[in-house]
Amino acid sequence: MSVDSATSVQAQTETYDDVSDVIEIRWHGRAGQGAKTGALLVGEAASGAGRYIQAFPEYGPERMGAPVVAYNRISREPITLHCGIESPRYVVILDTTLAGQIDLTAGVPDGGALIVNASWTPAEAREKLGVTNPAVRVYTVDATAISLEHIGRPIPNTPMLGALNRVAGLLDIDSLLESVRKKLEQRFRNRPEVVEGNVQAVKVAYEEVQGE
Amino acid sequence: MAVQRRSPAESVAMTGNEAVADAMRQINPDVVAAYPITPATEIVQIFSAYAADGRVDTEMVLAESEHSAMSATIGASAAGARAMTATSSQGLLLMHEMLYVASGARQPIVMPVVNRAVSAPLNIHCDHSDTMGSRDAGWIQIYSENAQEAYDNLIQAIRIAEHPNVQLPCMVMMDGFIISHGMENLFTLPDETVKEFIGERKPLYPLLDVDNPVTFGPVDFTDFYFEHKRQQFEAMLEAKKAILEVAAEFEKISGHRYGLFETYQLDDAEMAIVVMSSAAGTSRYVIDRLRRQGLKVGMLKPRVFRPFPAEELAEALKDIPVVAVMDRSDSFSGQGGPLFAEIRAALYEYDKRPIMVNYIYGLGGRDVRVESIESVYRDLDIIRRTGVVGPRVRHLDVRE
Image 1 (cartoon, rainbow over the protein chains, first blue to last red):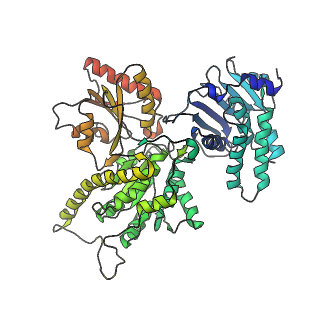
Image 2: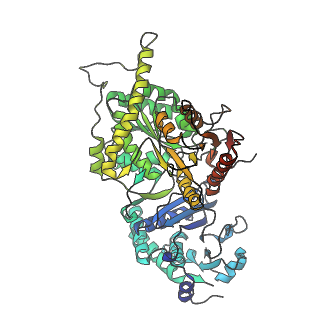
Image 3: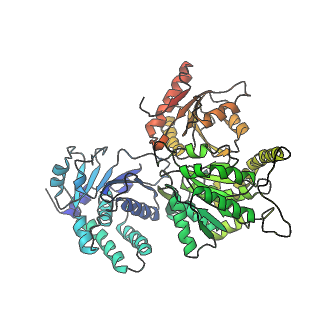
């Protein structure tokens, strides 16, 4: 059941101010898709916006295509925890072919959400990923298509930033875009089109993410 | 570290390795000689980019092994240079022979070490077996809880090592991956402030001072070897004073307060754990949670392991009924880890002292969860209420 994204996301989004606890996020992808970079970008953007943050990857085999997991903690209070994240409120899934190999919904509490890179509707994603808990929300956005269109390469992590930010209501979208721009300008000094493409991709995914 | 609250908007988001590399950029050492090893590789990788870009004046020496990296660092330091390197795990083990040369030759080398397990079996994740293996090598050892402390400690280490009464090498630790590869908010100091704080190195007997020739590392048999070792003992005692002196000055420029160790909710605690490095952060969270349930729990986090602040630690712990010492390494004595052994020894002189147990934990990067720390406090609570100690040495979260 896909409905107009703007209203459905808005209606179900809990804004950051509603929760005093630490927001925990888990990223799933395959090496090369940018799960770690996605977590670092969220961390930097949130830090710039005055939040306490952590961003850390889980280290496994370092080869293209291997499953990669990365994490974020975001809070208004200093974060002293240095343990793994077992019950993330938000899970960002860059690659749905991981389903079946990895329990993508592990530990997600009631009220939590999956944000999935797929051309499916949220209802299709729920069925195909086997999300049986009705209290876990499912959102989809075709981040691969967006990245191909705006960046020219299938790198879904930056568009997923936009989708995550929309669903989790983490930051003001303009400060997120500004932070992504700044970070990528350092990395792609001589390729402004890459920077612009990425910023555009974040924005488009922010607008297009769909809830059930 | 006690700290005045500042807005994270004033911070920069950095991983532990980035923070340490940035501190090294600000220290701007004369020579860095290094060999890469996971998870410390990034420190020198980032720093070598600073050197290549001309952002530091450092001469980089890319050595063919850690043994050579430490040898080159010692040579440069003896010549009068401010010399640094960085390593981890097997790399530190390969340096082991030269660690004693650095301290015996009284070279104030500062070295970040990213704590990692040692082989076999092969493991790249965090524990403290590497640096605990060099605890008797005559180096000052400072352990950091997070990226901020790693940054702050590294800058202070320059002043501590080069203190005229100390003149000893110093290693500054952070937990592998958990801190080295984890991004956190970091409050850095302006370049100028760091430059002024550390000043220029004033070598006491530089090799390159040809008008006043000296010899380093000569034969020193039954006649004077012992006297030199006696001086190293004295220098370590002086290091304890220097660490506190430097911390007081550092607080003025940073607002961050450091001591030989830090306590959290310890004053009225009926049960306490002693834990170093990143797990101390998780413990704070657990303490807050258990305090809300009415349990009087607290923590002591050693920062300085060499010199070992025995009297100060004993004074802080002596009145607490039950204490668990957490060791992220095992010395395989069959009697518990190194921290446990030394803290127990420190309390020997006291008539009244805690019941103490030891937990070996987190070896090879085994996650230290909130529940893990909570279970230790629950165990201590049972010991406190029943007086039954049970096993003295325990292993946390391990399959039996």
